Image 1 (tube, rainbow, N blue to C red):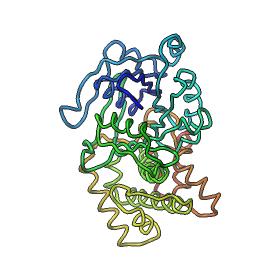
Image 2 (image 1 turned 90 degrees about the vertical axis):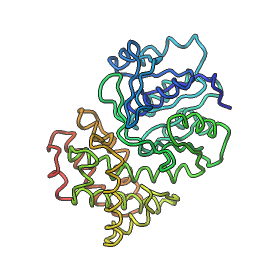
Image 3 (image 1 turned 90 degrees about the horizontal axis):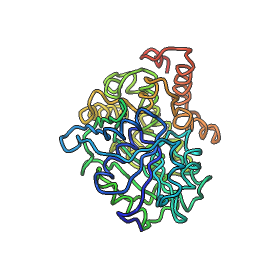
Length: 353
């Protein structure tokens, strides 16, 4: 059972990890943020972590217990962590989980608070029994400078579910319920019995938003208002949905849209495409124009992207099934070419897709 006295680690104090850490600290939880960016850690130590959002209650500065990853070993003589949120990029999952596991209590466990589907990677280090998933949907946070995080969408509240906590075996457990309860101080939160279906449904969102932003160099709203990139996004999600169904996942709503509608649109259904486009355009009203999906942020800052763990995963699973996913295959290669410096990001980079 999770208690308020539990000691919590958050490995990766980026946009999402930092956002969660600031709220949980404000709520009175014993939280330690662990990060690799020295300037960010030093700013949090000296000045706290500042959050900005769409409403006044979301805007605050919180004193934070933050340490650099090289200082984690100094905590070895203190009380171990009861559980750890792992909020690093997908490609850093294994080493980050290895790093924190020796600082957990014997019953301690890790929660994947990440894009992508990383529970298996985490379980390869700590075991399935110590692996929990947590999906953060439509949260749109950005670490724009050391010690400062923007949230570029309105709170989900009763309109949208933001946090979904799930066990890998699909049962509802006391720890999953307690995790959901503590996250409710941030925004809407639930326990799900369909972790894998929700993960793949979130992957559909990531596949349609992240690479298009990375490839075009534009934010989400700009791409949704452009006929070409808006329709490309629908195709990317529809292909990912087809693969999810073929893998046996129980898909859930994507932006309040039945995934079958996305798949129908991708297969050429004009009515389905029109409905899906209408929804994407409507979504621009609850995001501000500064919103840039995480892969777009990574590309803008010259960092490695998660393309191989998002659209690349769809391409990999499609190949195993012998199914075509030309849009995902194409956008993945475009993003890789931009990362390698072979082409420039911009709307023309996706004109052929």
